[in-house]
Length: 84
Image 1 (cartoon, rainbow, N blue to C red):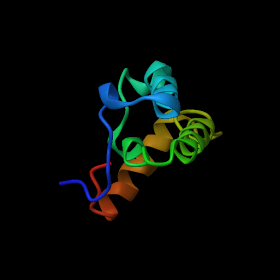
Image 2 (cartoon, rainbow, N blue to C red; image 1 turned 180 degrees about the horizontal axis):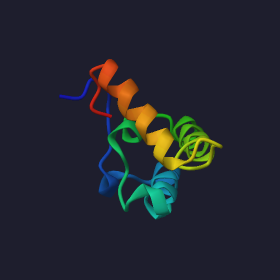
Image 3 (cartoon, helix red, strand yellow; image 1 turned 90 degrees about the horizontal axis):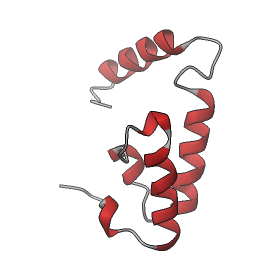
């Protein structure tokens, strides 16, 4: 059960729909809005800023390379008992 209001992709309108479209259309968006991003739907501009920052510093954008980034993310998630 979500503790914050979330929005299904087919429920969005206005600015949130525009932001979701950018996430969905991005090659790393995998055609969907990840739950961690969806949880910010009440604040579309904040969601967009977090999404763009994340895409700018992760998923191969850093000097670490994609494989090392994924290994670090997996280790941190495991330590935090987080499935993200």
